[in-house]
Image 1 (cartoon, rainbow, N blue to C red):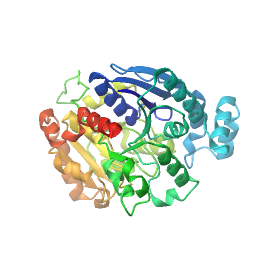
Image 2: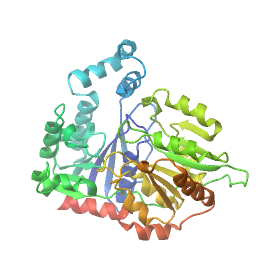
Image 3: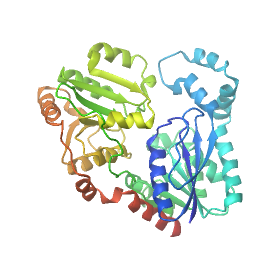
Image 4: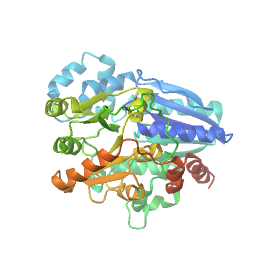
Length: 412
């Protein structure tokens, strides 16, 4: 088949959804399919080449600047009038804000639609697949005139709950998207929304579950062997999203542990959405807290390679499973899992992973919890699970298995 995948990294250049889509695209290319990638990027962090695939890029530095100046709409921080005044110093970013906020038609969506149509006229794809979230590319594909099938690969739901669906025309946009798609690839946790009593029951025939194509042997190698004098390194790799995934409980737990020979290392972005939080905890934890900010992929992988324990921060919503847990499992390293809600869907997966320690946020940071985590951290250095054992636990998350399911969905 000849397929076009559309990936969006404008807001989060190292976002995991795009990484997973590239992994699946490479798997399909190895099987002999013709795979093109249309990458929407921020104009600064260029998307990488993907093995066996043809790459096209669209830059949206104006929207990246808009997000930076407006501080991603986060509460607190610089007063809104000052943000708007600063925005006026960047005409392209100001125009981007007008398109997005006033006209509900961001340039990213309009330009993406034109490029989809141009590429399809040239290459005549069997199908075009928009990877979401973000959803700008999916809405662009919905309105595009093409000859092949249209599919939305929804790794994250567009609206997380019924209340969100009732606000700001979100439900209407979502229904329009589904009307225009030939296929909806969804996560297992989204299935209830498409069942008989769900809000999207009318689209059940268009859906197919796709697992996360995450499970591959670790691509990172520790080129600095651990010394006995090194601290126990507990590493979180990813971004924060207010209301969904935050660092607060991890920081409180680490303070309560009071382990002078351990470091809590956060690799990734999102701190700007919690003004003052980083400075507050740097003062409280000193050298035990390391914040790297966004790193190039190879440097982020190096930090993960040096970890004694990988840290998973659970989401606050029950219909989203962090795909990063399978990346963690593929490394074979011990994982400390901090679950924010009692019905966290990741809990069932961590119960199957032998080198995991789970703490529910509702358990707090009392002596019993701290002692359990201290023992886990103390025993973690040097432990590892062979990839073959992990593969046997989660065979549905191997990229080849996911590629097979996607092709079945497109041909069905």
